[in-house]
Image (cartoon, rainbow, N blue to C red):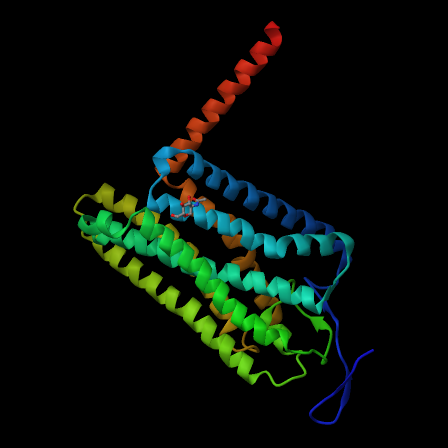
Length: 328
Ligand SMILES: *[C@@H]1O[C@H](CO)[C@@H](O)[C@H](O)[C@H]1NC(C)=O
């Protein structure tokens, strides 16, 4: 066993493993939660993969807006997959320990995905802003190449910044307690267990979080303010209603994503309880990836049309297949 000399002269055991407390103790709740999250995970994966497939296959959808939607759906499948499989496994087996390294890996990928998500949502709102508020310049300012740059930029900048945070985190040792009262390796809870001085790291992470969460959040909101004010000037009532309903559903999703993240990470602990914190975390980690494809893609007429065509083709193919089988 490793013994650690603390600054205060106290000897403490170095921790190699954490215990993720998850949703608390009652074992009779476990099967119910397992089924609930299994269904949510299945639906999230199915919905998002369906959208990626439709957008990749259908030539009619090869436009920047749909490229961005496809990339968002792809990102959502990765995002939920950083958390849910592990949660499901621990609900099923009752095993709640996770190695410190495992915890860091989970946190690293989760950090990359959530940062990329917030940057991609910003890119999507920028695309809509150009299309609605600047329609004459849209084609010159948004094309396949710009779209590629936006997507690549989101991934690269989230990977770079999270890697910097990770390098600092890898030097941490943990010794205060083994228990993390959450269902995934949450960064702020993990830092509370560190034996070393965490101020520098906290500052770096705070800067990263501000840069990649607050700034995209503000820019996204600004785009939507411009979009809504343009929509309000549309003379026809039906056109206005339609544009407004699309916009408001996007805004609701953005509000859920950002408000819950900000409540969990920025509002000082003590004001929000631990239970409330976990419930809010479920919102931005589990429900956003489930609802985003529905709100962004399935409400779009073109995607719906394309899905309908695909199902027709599939059922026609299926029918001809069964007929062939019967005739031979
Ligand atoms: C993601 O964006 C790139 C660049 O615009 C595009 O080529 C690609 O098809 C998109 N991916 C999906 C799944 O839509």
